Length: 50
Image 1 (cartoon, rainbow, N blue to C red):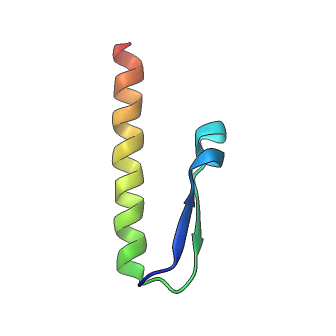
Image 2 (image 1 turned 45 degrees about the vertical axis):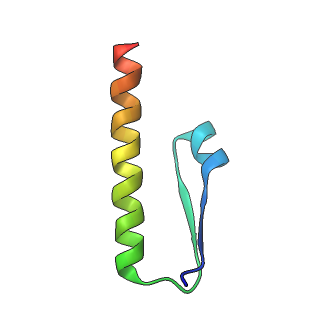
């Protein structure tokens, strides 16, 4: 089981999302980064529509 953590509070305040890596595979990190990018993209789209 990978041991990693995303600092969501810091990210929401600063726009910089920190990922604390423990014993994690590269493929898991890539998946998390892709998920964060998609989330940020849709968050920006929603802000532009509002």
